[in-house]
Length: 551
Ligand code: 16G
Ligand code: MG
Image (cartoon, rainbow, N blue to C red):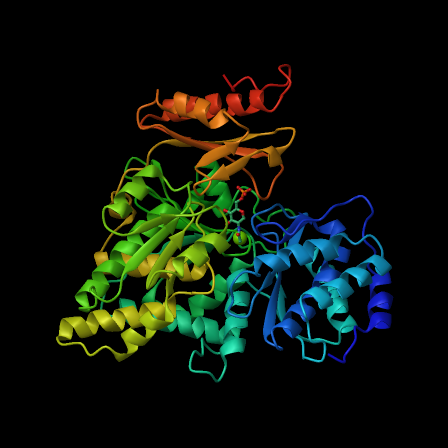
């Protein structure tokens, strides 16, 4: 390893991007995320890190996305994408945190030298990075800081402009598979839209078209993608985009978007004029990687169709197709969920398929789903996708159907592999997937919703002195510390019909989260608040500030 770090260039650029003294940055579940105004040094350093990650992987292209997803507009963030379009390898999350927290330029250079040595990075290799940002006003300056990081290492950068997180993931995989037998698609936005819409059009060809779908773009970057895909879909699907104000200050994710719908369990007020009885609608989040559906019934009651409902709809459909193609003895479909999955969805799915529960966070779900020939994964919050293993893909391509019905089902499965963005959860791809199933089944929101009835549930946040005192096991379903707390939760849960509750420290906020469900809504609320009370008391919360509702 002859090449050396270009110390002089790095230190000149680094001096332009000093670290704010008082802040400790953390590469969390979804990368670095905090106020956009304090992220300049982090972005510069992520530029350097991405270049090193590429060198480490023999010049493969690494992705970088500048976004804070569903967070309010003043926030921003950045995350790295590995060559197959998946989340950054966990060990490098630690490297990212170390580099971001070096207090001075000399400390930063020292940390880089240590990283190059310990990770055995061959600096003579090329470095290639593709990057994009969402519509936040702080984005352009942060991208400029990031580009300085690439310049410092003389890395080759490709600016994908303003685009969604899932499109950036798609580009990374397409670039790295170009010209190989695993070529994922043309490495352009056009390639992405052509691939998805092509799969969709084949799947719905000959099916009666569905009534138009209202699509809440959260005033974010999904707006551009929705506008573009409308052109590719033609008459195959009518979309009515709302919340498309990407340049109105403060509008992003404000009282709209997937997270708003899921957390407040109501539709965005801005969508109301478009919602008649029976109308189905969906909301994307601020970077278009989450999707929540909903509809109004004939009494104008709101009903939410969340990630669990999407998983149930999609998994059952794929199982049917695999069977109809005559491949059920060869291709197993499995589902991955987290503890937040509604108990009724888990019951519905386990009666039909193998189901695994893993800790919160996309990377856990994605990796678990890779173990199934077809892995369907969704978080209740609307993030998820379907993965077809390379062996499954080959089987689908080489299988000889013995009847016309088998041939049709097989073609549908092959079209699904086109329509689905397999690199990461993708609101637009998932929306097309849902619409495909609805068209095939002639379902409205009501019929889809009736697959199972959600158990009433409640999510509560508790502010504690030290959330790191909370440690979990069994995919976050049980606490191992603080000692004795789980036994007290168990005692409480037993008293509620259909009761279930779990406690976990958040990976994105300085709080502990309490989830509870029960057969009756008031009981789910009661259980959540009582467990929250236990958590609060356990961690030395002050009786004066103890929230009143923690009964
Ligand atoms: C992040 C995760 C999401 C998870 C959420 C949980 C990614 C890309 N996103 O947004 O999957 O559901 O965190 O947040 O991994 P919490 O730990 O604060 O409950
Ligand atoms: Mg998001």
